[in-house]
Image (cartoon, rainbow, N blue to C red; front, side):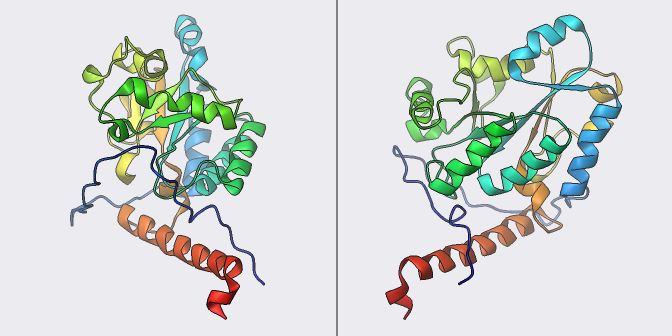
Length: 268
């Protein structure tokens, strides 16, 4: 019988009451995802390296700022799939680049503690990438102190995670973040808030502040924090919605195949 991956269809149980998600409405004029493929991702990383940028972790930011040399902190918020994250991580590993992968305990699409995903996280660690918590503060009605307790929960299962970092899911404005109260948030967002680094992101499947290679920061060889989401780079489609729908259909097929194996009498 053909084997299918189980990790893409197991939803994690919510740890606390969360807000109802807002319906997704895509504008008819939503931008096409030109230049969003695994090949394009390889070329993007190579362009940074060719321009003299070094890739570093969050702990190195202060030292790198003192050295006044170009560097980029590469970060991924994993909202959809650790399986897709592994594809991006492999590309980085092939180029000798390390990034930080922020995983969540609240995704409706994957279970961080399942066996397949545990294997994915272990592989990320083996390749030298860092793993940290992606916090959904809405699950705790904005109580950051309670939300950040999840770091301890995650560390019980993955003792090698970076407990000094945390990123936010659908974050509020920087000015509203309690950076002074929580070092885990300050270590990720502090350098952006202080304008020591330029923040660039592909959130919602588009470059929110223009393509990184066209940015003033890149042209001036200034420090950059680059946030990308693996789903936009690893799925086919011209629009973000097409990419998401394609992945959801593949996830459905994998889940159905897993159900056939796990509950054979039901399908007899």
